Amino acid sequence: MNMAAFTRQVLCWHRQFGRKDLPWQQNPTAYRVWVSEIMLQQTQVATVIPYYRRFIASFPDIESLAVATGDDVLHHWSGLGYYARARNLHRTACLIRERHGGVFPNLFDDIIELPGIGRSTAGAILSLACKQRYPILDGNVKRVLARFHAVDGWPGKTAVSKKLWALADEHTPQQDVAAYTQAIMDLGATVCTRSGPNCNLCPLRDGCSAFERDAVTRYPGRREPKKKPLRHTHMVLAHINGAVYLERRPAEGIWGGLWSLPELADENDLNEWCERELNARPAELDRWHTMRHSFTHFDLDIQPIAVRLSAQSSTVRDTEDRVWYKIGSPPPGGMAAPVSKLIQTLRNS
Image 1 (cartoon, one colour):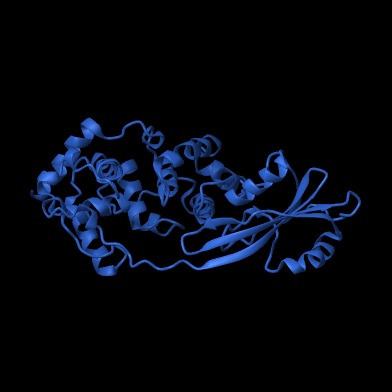
Image 2 (image 1 turned 60 degrees about the vertical axis):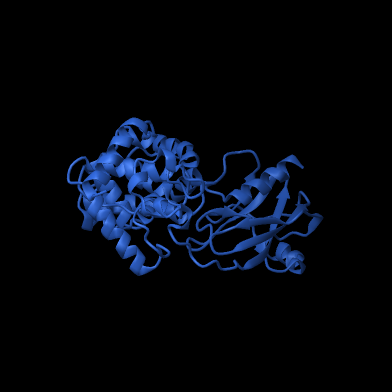
C-alpha cells in the first residue's frame, strides 16, 4: 500500500466510522483545540469530556482564562491529574494576552514557544483548527504507524522517534489535513488500540506489516520496565468544628499549587508540629489505613492521621497559603484526588 492509498483508506474509514461528536470538534477554534489536546495528554477521552465541558463553560476564551486565578484553574482541573498541564494552560493564556493581543497565534514557531506545547500538540492545533499541513505524533498515531510499518524499538528513543516523525510527515496529505489528523487519531484510539486491537475492522489491515507477521502487539516497542520506587508520607487531617487545616503546596513539583493536607516524614513529630504550626495540642488521634497513590515515576504510601483539636486551641488565621477549610463548602482551589478523598472520609466519619 503506497502513501496515497494509506491516506485514502484512513479518510474513507473516518467518514463512515470516525468520531464526529466530541465537544472540541464543535467550533474547533485554536483555543478549544489547544485545551482539548492538553487535557488528552496521558488521559482517556471518556475522562476528559466532562472536565473539558466544565472548563470551557468557565473559561470560554483566552481572556477569561488569563484573568482567572490560579486556584480557580486548578479547581477545574482537580482529579484530572498531571497538574503542570493546568499551570501551563494558565501561563500560556497570560502570555498570549501579553504577546499576541489575546489571539491564539497561528504560526508554528510562535506556538511551539508557549509553555506545555510540543511539536505534536502544535501540529494538532494548526491542522485541526487552522487547516495548515502539519503532522502529529501522539500516542495513537505512533501506534498506527509503528504497526503498519513494523517500526522496531521504543518510540521514546531518539532514532525511533525520528523515523516515526518522518513517516507521519509522509502520510499527512496536502488536502483534507484536518480530517486526516482526526481520522488517524481516531483509528488508533478506537481500532488500533494498545491491547486487543480489532484488526478485522482496520482499513489498513491488508498493508499492515505487523498484521502480516502476526505480531501486532509487538509494536510499538515497549520501554524496558523499571521498578517504581515506593515513598512514604504522613498526611495530617487537623480538624476543628467541621473545618480541616490545608496548606498550599509549592508551585513546582508534585501537586504544585494545589491545596493539600500537611505532610510529616515521621509520625513522632506530630505533637511538635501541632504546637508549632497550629498553636494547639491534639485532643484525639485516629490513625487510618494506609492509602497508596501511583504517580508516573513512583508510588506513594499515604498514612492519614486524623487529629481532632480542642475548640479553643487554634489561633491560626487564614492566609494566602493556609486555610481552615469548612468541609462541604466550595474548596479554596484545586485539590489532588487523594486529598479530596481523605477529606470526604473525614466528613463521613
